[in-house]
Length: 410
Image 1: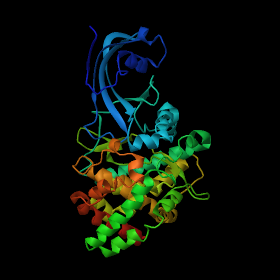
Image 2: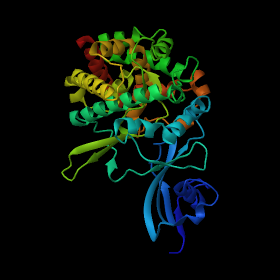
Image 3: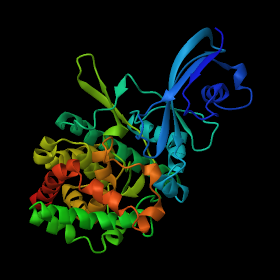
Image 4: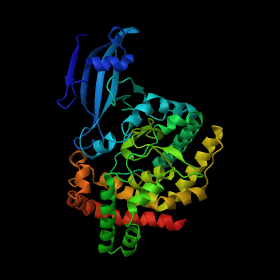
C-alpha cells in the first residue's frame, strides 16, 4: 500500500508519520523497522471553541508491524496543550499539564489494577513533551450531550465509578505516597492565582442578580459568603489532617465522561478523561461538581442524598476489598459538604457557569482572556455579560435553590 496522508491546516507540523510510528512503537530510534505507518488522516476532535485547555486531534491510521504483513487499522487521540490565554498561564506556573504525563505514564494503570477495572483510555508513547497519545474510545464509548444532562441511571454509575476511583487512589497511596503527591498540587485555587478576581467579582454579581430577580433568600445566602470568598475557598479545599482525603479527579463533568451501551442501548460501563485538575482533598468535591454541572433537575431535586448514600456504601465496600483501613461515613460526608461551601460558590462562578454557556454566543474564549485582564478588571464587562445572559438567568435560581435545599435537608 503506498504511503498517503490527509491533514487539516490546524494540525501541528510535528504530528506526522514519524511521530505516529514512534507512538505505536513505544519510542526509540529504530521503531520504523518494527512499525510502518502506511496512511493516516488527522482532523480536529473538537468543534471550534471547545478547547478549554487542550487541542484534541483524531488520527485514523493504517500501519504494518513485524507481527503481521497486513495493514492494521488504529484510531488515536492526540492531545496538545493550548499555548495562550488564562489556562496556559495557570498551567505554566503549576503541575497542570505534567499531571497527565504521570497519570498516563503509570498511575492510572496502577489504580485500574487495584480495582480490576480499566478507569480510562490506554495511552501510548509520546515523543513530544506534554503531548498525550491515547486510544480513541469511540465508537464503543460515547460522550453524552451536555445540554440534555444525565439521569439517575447515569448518575448512579458515575457515583459507583467515583467510589471505585477514589478507593483505588487510596490503595496506591499506601503503596507509593510520593506518586500520589506528585499529582496532588493545586493548580486553580491558589491564594494569589488569577482566578481570584473572577471568583470575587462573580460571587457578588450572581448574589445581586438573584436578589434582583426576586430570590432574596438565595441572593443573601451567596452574598453572605462574598467577603473573603477566595481565601475561604482556598483554605477549605486543602486536605485536612484527621479527615478522609483522597486524590480526586477534579473535573468530573459530562465532557470528561464516556459511556458504553450494549446492543439494547442499556448502560454498561464508563471511563473518565482529563486528569489535569487532580488534587488531594475531600471526595465530596467530585460528587458536587458532577451533580451541579451534569446531572438533570430530577436527580438534583429528588436523589442527591440517595446518591451520597450510594457513594459511601460503594466506597467503603471497595476500601474493604482493597484491604484499606480507611472508612467514610455519611456524617463525615455531610460535614465535608458544609465545610466546602466557599469552594462550591467560587467553583460555581468560575468553573460551572462557563460550562453552561459554552457553545453559545455568551460563551468565553479562554485563549482570549489573560490573568492580567482579570486582575485589572478589564474582563468585568465580559464576565458580567456571561453572568447575566438569558441562559444563566434561567438556570441560576433553580441550581441555587437545589443546592441550598440540599444543605438544609441534612
